[in-house]
Image (tube, rainbow over all chains, first blue to last red):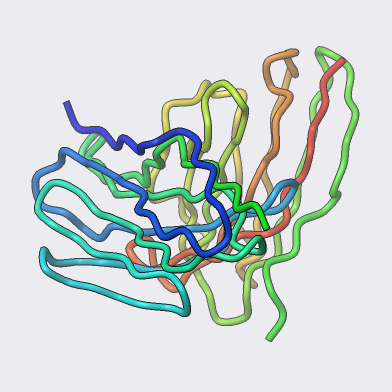
Length: 112
Length: 112
Protein backbone atom coordinates (compact mmCIF):
# COMPACT_ATOMS: atom_id res chain seq x y z
CA UNK A 1 0.00 0.00 0.00
CA UNK A 2 1.29 3.44 -0.91
CA UNK A 3 2.00 5.53 2.13
CA UNK A 4 4.16 8.17 3.81
CA UNK A 5 5.57 7.70 7.32
CA UNK A 6 7.57 10.16 9.37
CA UNK A 7 9.74 9.45 12.39
CA UNK A 8 10.21 10.28 15.13
CA UNK A 9 6.86 11.82 16.05
CA UNK A 10 8.58 14.21 18.42
CA UNK A 11 12.18 15.22 18.96
CA UNK A 12 13.74 17.37 21.64
CA UNK A 13 17.24 18.73 21.07
CA UNK A 14 19.60 21.02 22.86
CA UNK A 15 20.75 24.04 20.91
CA UNK A 16 23.68 22.95 18.76
CA UNK A 17 22.80 19.24 18.92
CA UNK A 18 22.54 18.01 15.33
CA UNK A 19 20.02 15.33 14.32
CA UNK A 20 17.97 13.91 11.45
CA UNK A 21 14.28 13.50 10.71
CA UNK A 22 13.06 10.65 8.54
CA UNK A 23 10.35 10.38 5.91
CA UNK A 24 9.85 6.94 4.40
CA UNK A 25 7.55 6.34 1.48
CA UNK A 26 6.28 3.52 -0.66
CA UNK A 27 5.21 4.57 -4.11
CA UNK A 28 6.23 3.58 -7.60
CA UNK A 29 7.19 6.46 -9.81
CA UNK A 30 7.98 9.25 -7.35
CA UNK A 31 6.70 12.60 -8.54
CA UNK A 32 8.63 14.61 -6.03
CA UNK A 33 9.10 14.58 -2.28
CA UNK A 34 8.35 17.85 -0.53
CA UNK A 35 9.47 19.11 2.88
CA UNK A 36 7.56 21.80 4.76
CA UNK A 37 7.90 23.51 8.09
CA UNK A 38 4.80 24.46 10.07
CA UNK A 39 4.69 26.79 13.04
CA UNK A 40 1.72 26.64 15.46
CA UNK A 41 -1.39 28.33 14.08
CA UNK A 42 0.17 28.92 10.66
CA UNK A 43 0.14 27.25 7.27
CA UNK A 44 3.07 25.05 6.21
CA UNK A 45 6.07 26.83 4.71
CA UNK A 46 7.82 25.23 1.76
CA UNK A 47 11.42 24.12 2.34
CA UNK A 48 12.61 21.68 -0.35
CA UNK A 49 11.56 19.53 -3.28
CA UNK A 50 13.55 16.41 -4.19
CA UNK A 51 12.86 14.40 -7.33
CA UNK A 52 15.62 11.82 -7.79
CA UNK A 53 17.45 9.38 -5.54
CA UNK A 54 20.81 10.86 -4.59
CA UNK A 55 19.56 14.41 -4.80
CA UNK A 56 20.45 16.79 -1.96
CA UNK A 57 19.39 20.34 -1.15
CA UNK A 58 20.51 22.74 1.55
CA UNK A 59 19.17 25.84 3.18
CA UNK A 60 20.91 27.40 6.16
CA UNK A 61 21.06 24.69 8.86
CA UNK A 62 18.83 22.26 6.93
CA UNK A 63 19.86 19.64 4.40
CA UNK A 64 17.45 17.27 2.69
CA UNK A 65 18.51 14.02 1.04
CA UNK A 66 16.60 11.40 -0.94
CA UNK A 67 16.96 7.68 -1.53
CA UNK A 68 14.60 5.29 -3.31
CA UNK A 69 12.73 4.58 -0.10
CA UNK A 70 13.19 7.53 2.22
CA UNK A 71 14.25 11.11 2.72
CA UNK A 72 16.17 12.64 5.58
CA UNK A 73 16.06 16.18 6.83
CA UNK A 74 19.34 16.85 8.58
CA UNK A 75 19.46 19.72 11.04
CA UNK A 76 22.95 20.94 11.84
CA UNK A 77 23.59 22.92 15.04
CA UNK A 78 19.91 23.79 15.50
CA UNK A 79 18.72 26.96 17.18
CA UNK A 80 15.52 27.51 19.21
CA UNK A 81 13.95 29.23 16.19
CA UNK A 82 14.14 25.91 14.32
CA UNK A 83 11.44 24.59 16.66
CA UNK A 84 8.43 23.65 14.52
CA UNK A 85 6.63 20.68 13.01
CA UNK A 86 8.33 19.35 9.91
CA UNK A 87 6.11 17.70 7.31
CA UNK A 88 6.98 15.69 4.25
CA UNK A 89 4.65 14.96 1.35
CA UNK A 90 4.58 12.83 -1.78
CA UNK A 91 2.01 12.48 -4.52
CA UNK A 92 0.35 9.08 -4.29
CA UNK A 93 -1.84 7.47 -6.95
CA UNK A 94 -5.55 7.63 -6.24
CA UNK A 95 -8.38 6.88 -8.61
CA UNK A 96 -6.37 7.36 -11.76
CA UNK A 97 -4.77 10.55 -10.54
CA UNK A 98 -2.16 11.59 -8.01
CA UNK A 99 -2.94 13.41 -4.81
CA UNK A 100 -0.52 15.03 -2.35
CA UNK A 101 -0.22 12.92 0.78
CA UNK A 102 1.41 14.27 3.91
CA UNK A 103 3.08 12.38 6.70
CA UNK A 104 1.95 13.06 10.28
CA UNK A 105 5.00 15.23 10.88
CA UNK A 106 7.86 15.45 13.36
CA UNK A 107 7.44 17.98 16.14
CA UNK A 108 10.87 19.45 16.87
CA UNK A 109 11.69 21.43 20.00
CA UNK A 110 15.12 22.97 20.37
CA UNK A 111 16.01 24.06 23.88
CA UNK A 112 18.40 26.99 24.41
CA UNK B 1 5.03 39.56 -3.76
CA UNK B 2 1.84 39.01 -1.81
CA UNK B 3 1.29 35.56 -0.36
CA UNK B 4 -1.78 33.38 -0.23
CA UNK B 5 -4.68 35.10 1.51
CA UNK B 6 -7.45 33.19 3.21
CA UNK B 7 -10.60 34.69 4.67
CA UNK B 8 -12.00 34.61 7.21
CA UNK B 9 -9.33 33.55 9.70
CA UNK B 10 -11.81 32.23 12.25
CA UNK B 11 -15.38 30.97 12.01
CA UNK B 12 -17.86 29.50 14.46
CA UNK B 13 -20.84 27.70 12.95
CA UNK B 14 -23.67 25.54 14.21
CA UNK B 15 -24.27 21.95 13.15
CA UNK B 16 -26.36 21.77 10.01
CA UNK B 17 -25.28 25.16 8.69
CA UNK B 18 -23.14 25.67 5.64
CA UNK B 19 -19.95 27.69 5.29
CA UNK B 20 -17.92 29.24 2.47
CA UNK B 21 -14.20 29.89 2.75
CA UNK B 22 -12.22 32.05 0.39
CA UNK B 23 -8.67 31.86 -0.95
CA UNK B 24 -6.70 34.31 -3.08
CA UNK B 25 -3.60 32.63 -4.56
CA UNK B 26 -0.24 34.15 -5.37
CA UNK B 27 -0.37 36.18 -8.55
CA UNK B 28 0.45 33.98 -11.53
CA UNK B 29 -0.42 30.72 -9.80
CA UNK B 30 -3.23 28.83 -11.50
CA UNK B 31 -3.38 25.79 -9.22
CA UNK B 32 -5.24 26.09 -5.93
CA UNK B 33 -5.52 23.17 -3.51
CA UNK B 34 -7.53 22.85 -0.33
CA UNK B 35 -6.61 20.83 2.74
CA UNK B 36 -8.17 19.93 6.06
CA UNK B 37 -5.88 19.69 9.10
CA UNK B 38 -6.95 18.08 12.36
CA UNK B 39 -4.94 16.69 15.29
CA UNK B 40 -6.37 13.24 14.65
CA UNK B 41 -5.94 12.92 10.90
CA UNK B 42 -3.17 15.37 10.12
CA UNK B 43 -3.10 17.28 6.86
CA UNK B 44 -5.47 15.80 4.29
CA UNK B 45 -6.01 16.81 0.68
CA UNK B 46 -9.54 17.89 -0.26
CA UNK B 47 -9.32 18.94 -3.90
CA UNK B 48 -7.34 20.92 -6.45
CA UNK B 49 -8.50 23.39 -9.03
CA UNK B 50 -6.59 24.49 -12.11
CA UNK B 51 -7.93 27.03 -14.58
CA UNK B 52 -11.43 26.82 -13.08
CA UNK B 53 -11.56 23.00 -13.35
CA UNK B 54 -11.35 20.49 -10.53
CA UNK B 55 -8.44 18.23 -11.48
CA UNK B 56 -7.95 16.12 -8.37
CA UNK B 57 -10.11 15.15 -5.44
CA UNK B 58 -9.35 13.55 -2.10
CA UNK B 59 -11.48 11.12 -0.14
CA UNK B 60 -14.05 13.47 1.36
CA UNK B 61 -17.87 13.36 1.16
CA UNK B 62 -19.81 15.40 -1.34
CA UNK B 63 -20.67 17.96 1.36
CA UNK B 64 -17.25 19.41 0.59
CA UNK B 65 -17.16 21.30 -2.68
CA UNK B 66 -15.25 24.09 -4.27
CA UNK B 67 -14.88 26.29 -7.27
CA UNK B 68 -12.32 28.51 -8.91
CA UNK B 69 -12.92 31.78 -10.68
CA UNK B 70 -11.27 33.17 -13.80
CA UNK B 71 -8.85 35.24 -11.68
CA UNK B 72 -7.74 31.98 -9.93
CA UNK B 73 -9.40 32.92 -6.66
CA UNK B 74 -11.08 29.92 -5.10
CA UNK B 75 -13.86 29.19 -2.67
CA UNK B 76 -14.58 26.09 -0.66
CA UNK B 77 -18.03 25.23 0.62
CA UNK B 78 -19.06 22.78 3.30
CA UNK B 79 -22.77 22.04 3.61
CA UNK B 80 -24.67 20.47 6.49
CA UNK B 81 -21.83 20.99 8.92
CA UNK B 82 -20.96 18.26 11.41
CA UNK B 83 -18.99 18.55 14.64
CA UNK B 84 -16.21 16.54 13.00
CA UNK B 85 -15.74 19.25 10.39
CA UNK B 86 -14.06 21.43 13.01
CA UNK B 87 -10.55 21.90 11.67
CA UNK B 88 -8.00 24.23 10.19
CA UNK B 89 -8.72 24.59 6.48
CA UNK B 90 -5.70 25.47 4.41
CA UNK B 91 -5.44 26.73 0.89
CA UNK B 92 -2.26 26.36 -1.15
CA UNK B 93 -1.32 27.84 -4.49
CA UNK B 94 1.29 26.69 -6.97
CA UNK B 95 2.21 26.93 -10.63
CA UNK B 96 1.14 23.34 -11.06
CA UNK B 97 0.18 20.39 -8.90
CA UNK B 98 3.66 18.83 -8.96
CA UNK B 99 5.51 21.97 -7.92
CA UNK B 100 6.02 23.41 -4.47
CA UNK B 101 2.91 24.76 -2.79
CA UNK B 102 2.60 28.00 -0.87
CA UNK B 103 0.08 27.90 1.92
CA UNK B 104 -2.15 30.54 3.42
CA UNK B 105 -2.58 31.06 7.14
CA UNK B 106 -5.71 28.96 7.13
CA UNK B 107 -9.27 29.35 8.35
CA UNK B 108 -10.00 27.89 11.77
CA UNK B 109 -13.55 26.49 11.62
CA UNK B 110 -15.30 25.49 14.81
CA UNK B 111 -18.64 23.68 14.58
CA UNK B 112 -20.75 23.73 17.73
